[in-house]
Image 1 (cartoon, rainbow, N blue to C red):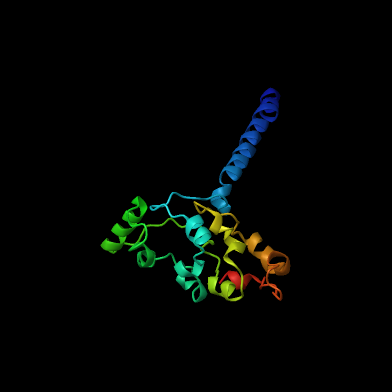
Image 2: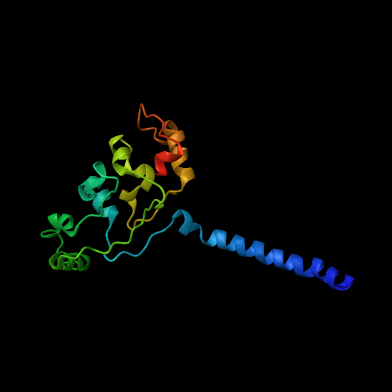
Length: 189
């Protein structure tokens, strides 16, 4: 290899390759943030459902629709029959309610797109948190003020550990809250 060629490699090619690698990593890192931590994720749903109207204006409790949140690790997606408890009478001529009624009559579940998701390798139990008095708004944001629901908080390990290690600061509405477990096997089972 000639000295000129080696000099060319070190002065031109190496910096260019390093620049492309660093730029690619940086762009990928920032562009994929929403996919990694979910903040801002707000998919278009098959039926336009307003939490602002239902949970906000009408003050329907989260647990009326998400029935298993006190007894299961999952906060179940409401079935069409829960919606139809009111909508067999209320506003049944509206386009979105007509769509809902069609799903109900066909016996087909609404294909809602999941918004809040803990990674598959992490164990999370809604009932433990709800039964300790932790309000939905602490993790999900003020859903009652959202016309379209989106993920407001991160569900990455750092966010969970921050709350588990600083429960008094993160949950000031709970008078005698203890910190949650912060050992690995509490969530990685």
